[in-house]
Image 1 (cartoon, rainbow, N blue to C red):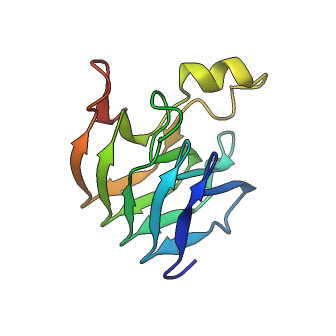
Image 2: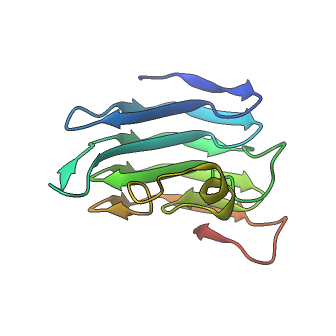
Length: 142
């Protein structure tokens, strides 16, 4: 996805899952005004450590989580081998980047073993501003 705008949705702007070794790349794009997450990316194989290779780079994620304020990151990444690079995260009520299963997600999933965390994921040169203004238990990366 190149120079795309994801937003004005009731839940997520983008969801990609189940892809191994041929992940998607989102670049120079905007995620805004979503009810929940801006994007959720999941992939890779924990047993073989084959990466899902999803990339989000040079993009802006702001004003997501407009309906569900808590435990909805602007960007959630789960699995193996993803990259989040050179992005702006701004004006987010609870968290910017989620790298593990939230309590809400745990209640909704039967098989959480495959998405508990992000292994071999790179998070580099991102800018986090005005994050966590609706919660005391929060963080830019949670």
